[in-house]
Image (cartoon, rainbow, N blue to C red):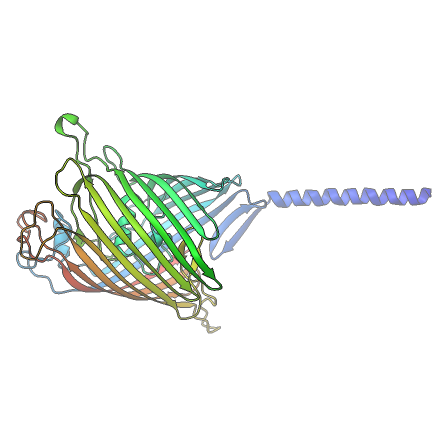
Length: 471
């Protein structure tokens, strides 16, 4: 009996020692830092996942050929760009063929103390010309509640088109109306505080926003971005998306000191856009400045996916409330419909976190030795954006309160080649139709504004390619 008890005690002691060693090993593993390189993205994280840091990088280079009627002198060639911009008016007659680094971003994102997320991205790219650099995003988020709370500088999701990552959208630029609405109260580098959350079938977000980091005004703009999306139908390999979004300017930025004795500073709002490409930065439709009390843009979303085919569409209604004016409040609208078909069979990835369709992920990354070619996707889109209000017929002078911003219609056809999750190539053709009447006077530039009612729009074709490396 004594011998058996001694043996049993020894076994218990050995078990305690082994258990203590195991606990020590587990604790060491939990505190150890791991390094991974999934999809070329360097990530450092603690064993328990409470802390992490991932390096993010995006490089997008665009090249384009603008096929348009040969330029004539300003006195006889009436094609024009933005109001009051001599450079754009000159360039509208000869849009610049060439190349542009659209985005060159580098930053870091991750987690701290388990319940905080963060993101800091700097951008050296630009529209039409590269920039010295600016903050694209810099925010911190508390994720310990059902609805996450985010504050800092970021781009709140403004629409279904905006919900796709800028590295995975169907075309290299968003549809014109969606891009313009995005810039009203959202967009990159926007000061904001908001909440966001999602479930398996729903997504909701709301944010109060201010100016972008590159804009300084006397009083900053106060805006609001809200969105609700829902998937009412879903099955094996297919789903239907619906949604509604609101982008509001509650109080526009002031142009100067708000001195009551002089009637207060103007608070201008302006809507304008490029022909869905930014190698040349010229805007061919433009409302000009509207002294306004606020703006309301309401959007309706519809999307559907079945395996490797998807389609999405949005309609936007935009209303501007004038400030201290008896003139009628202008209204604008726009819509688009687009579809994608992945020839190699991979579906676009519907993200419940953003309620949007992101790029397909190649099942077999490009490898000549193995005969793999990645994923190939065909794309088509038609968009229309009408910035005219009481424009009137050609050859006529504008009525009081009219806005001749122009109407832009674009048919786009493209092909996207995803060599692997990091490298992709895109090529596209655009047929652009701009219908726009001159308001006369000195609306464009004194001495070079065509007579009232003259056609200042144009038809052109654009061919473009993009090279992208993103991790």
